[in-house]
Image (cartoon, rainbow, N blue to C red):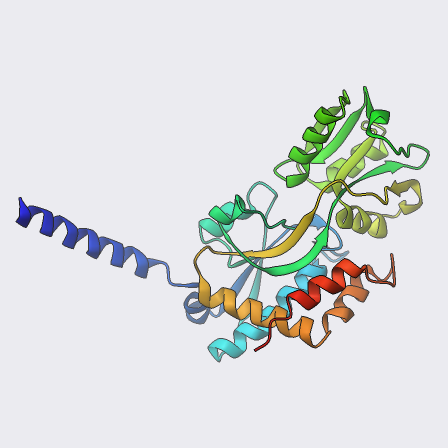
Length: 285
């Protein structure tokens, strides 16, 4: 029996070792393939979206481009970028199944999600809010009683919104959409009374919309949404490279240029909370 147990443990060790070598860590994999796969959302401006030429752009995309430069220095060779589109539903699965190396978008860092993937230092902070057509603004949730509210499925906003409606005894119907673009079109048509999402995403949608003057965004938020980039879980070496790049951007205040590039059109003044976020995450070398 002891011999059988020893043999079983030995073979289990071999299998575990073999499995570990089948999928190398991210830095080794990038060095072997010469490319880094960036997962991105296609309609989450100004964090991650497609420009008029269908190229991925945005605040998070710019952060990831800086990270690619850091990866090149870390492995000592050139690296090509491969952009891989993901959805709210598929983004974490793409990391778990090794289809992407880093997720660059508008992803809220939570403890439950940390069971699936790893997160970098914080990159942004926002909160859920509402967008309506002009003339449809409201100050109390009770104004949505008997109406439809749009939200993108598989986001943190949807559960928070449902809880708030329940707590305020507001009988509103929550309508789920696959993307922010779908929800915005539904709002345009008057099919929903409001669209709820992270306030920064709503701002980005307005800034990039041709009919931007038709919409209003509530200045109030009803949740706390700390954004971070997502990487594979337990991949400490790659996460360290990513965090080193982010920390340097914050320490040197190069991050201000990126912030102004993507949010300056809405507000030239950075909220105190953002300055605090950058300072707290400016980890020294």
